[in-house]
Image (cartoon, rainbow, N blue to C red):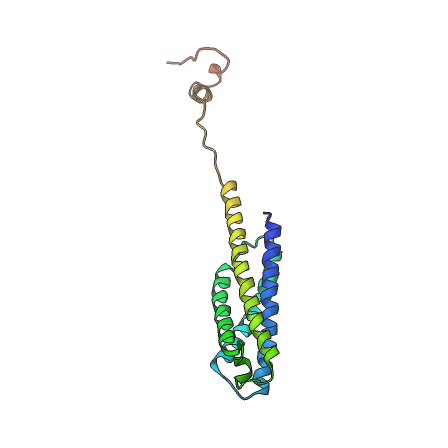
Length: 183
């Protein structure tokens, strides 16, 4: 796969993660501003979404450069686990009939499910991004190895003998004349 295609898919995954974080931030911020309930799960979701926005804003731009080799791979690993935890928290708190029973926005089940779905979308695109960046990093390292291969050929003995003769005896050996030494 070409480097440009991989970098394009990485940029798309970064954008989808960024967009999901913006949506989760907006909806959870609405919940926090409208309702007095401040549970640990809702605060965790807000913090992860807010931390994701500036990091992936930079990450969206970075694959544009041709020197990008998949530097965000470790960050994608970390954030994939954080977003998985955020998805688990929202699924535990708001799935099924629990949506209507929680103190946070009793009649706002559609918004709660929106947060839950975009938590999963962010996690999904982070996992896709891990795979794409690993392939990109592998391709760059493969290209680097191929460009650094040095072919070691044994020099021919005729060329070595001729250079040794001309270096030791001077130019007369090249003309076919016997070397002369002065005493």
